[in-house]
Image (cartoon, rainbow, N blue to C red; front, side):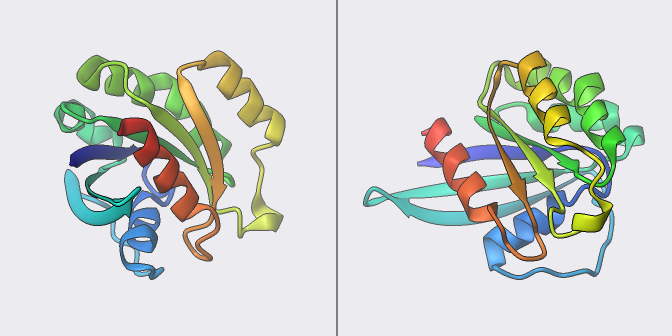
Length: 166
């Protein structure tokens, strides 16, 4: 089976790094902003069946908003990603990302990811902030705190979303 999932969130939250960690097992700090969209493929075997994920890495710049909306069409699941060191990146998920996904992909499984947990001294988003967000957005099915650098919870998040879209 083939499934399209998207990663959405502000520029610099680590979407590309999360995908690279999941697809290749490698973290790279050679950061280049995504222009438009990049598509990755990952083949998994779950319960003795082959699953092919098309993972769409959607540009986070606000200047791409009108274009990125079409990238959500046909998605079966989405990660909404924020940076634990940038509270505005969580707030911005309210403003446009969730609405854009739902308007273009419909009611699909959403998982919240708080990335960069490895930057412990710089974390400014509290557990209460995350809880409040989840209360406001009951359509978000789960959440994970991750680190693309160390790989913490990255595989778990992708496995969970894959289970939800199957």
